[in-house]
Amino acid sequence: MDEDLEKLKKKRLQELQQQMSVQDSLEEQNLQQQDFEEKKKQILRSLLTNPARERLGRIKIARPEIAESIENQIIMLGQSGQLKNKINDEQLRILLSKIIPKKRDISIKRR
Image 1 (cartoon, helix red, strand yellow):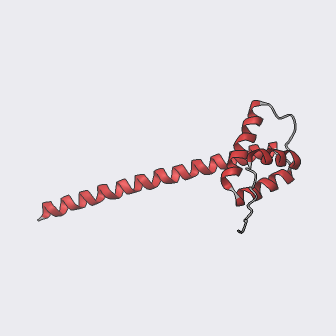
Image 2 (tube, one colour):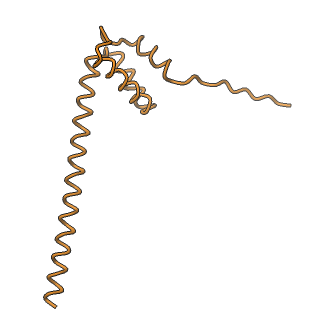
């Protein structure tokens, strides 16, 4: 009886240790993700003017996948040295018009 109880205690202890290690790894991943996002914000802050950053923030709320794509492109341009000046709002609009697909006009014809 004592042996069975001891085995159950050991098994439960191992399960708890595994759960703790999983939680620790998740916390570490979250910290790495937050660090990555902070570095990304700093880079974008140095590459975009305030109005352009505000526009990108609004786009991020409406269409996060497109904003992510634009952010990555801007960062790549900045790191490769292709940007001489900060990207202003007008330049960001031009970049957006190239990326965001055009809306289709839908017309309904009645017969």
